[in-house]
Length: 445
Image 1 (tube, rainbow, N blue to C red):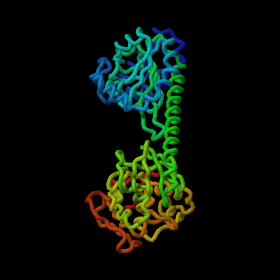
Image 2: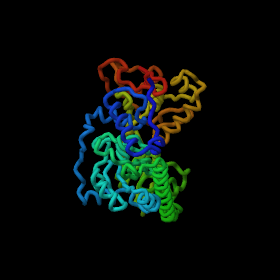
Image 3: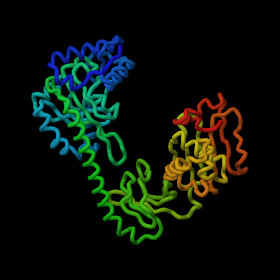
């Protein structure tokens, strides 16, 4: 017997009591492992399985301690969602009130920071734990329109017995995550919730559209902030020689001189003025500006990066570290990028795109893929990678850490070029990165 998922439109057309009985039957069958003709929707069934594996009791209404008021205010002040509350109110509150819903806004931890709606519905929400400072994360309160939306990263509607915890079966809720357009960071969830009788399939597209409007407003505010920074920085940049730019606190450029406008640059989490080595630019001098930083590139190559450490010892966790007089930094590598850097480390004289394609794919014609991947790598490693042919810069010492039982041999490598600086005894290739496309080891043994 093939199980087909229940349809939300069918639930909306049913009598509330009948829909609840049907969902409870589906839930009991699913939680007990019985097969039935009708099953939960995929997003709900996957949530139930996660919670069963965590050992969450579906008959226990678990409430995690509320945040104190000062912590709620601190999180509100730190949340970019505060800037778009007017968008949420204008687009959702009036509709929610007419539908006997309340609007909830959580942060990325699932903590409820704002809620608005009619007092009568807010009181009903209190009974379900929808109070300021509550933790609505899925792992604590079960399947719901806030916590589950955070887990899956997309809009979710949860109705009646689709909630994992039975105490919430008289409630319906719909949530959509909001991400920061500047860096893709998850900011929180916008949610419309109410009693069972208020369920409507149109709630999901409504809440989703309001979340997209909020992201659009954040994008517009960011653009305005960059314009302000540009007006401050342009007179300064006009008086400078060499390469320089003005960037906001997140590394987005507002204006440049002596160079092409780059994409976002990586800044430290807490940047400070002074000399700093930046992945895509090399050694720079940072000076504070209103709303951002003035970044001046130091042109003396002798003070740039001097050593690269390629760490290939952990499966799917390859990384590269850059060391120089201004300090050091590191970043994770995808299996494909780890393989590219490994090939260049073995061939310090350099490789053409065709040679790299032959080395990586066994097909010299796949030069477009190689050039695209090298372009992505050079955004972050511009000061240690050269092109025509692709290679590590001559002045840079390259070291490789790899899981191996024998010293690595690099027959094409000059004696002073590359060194294996650590050997880890173990099964050959056991922890080597794996190519996501082919499933084969991403780094040659």
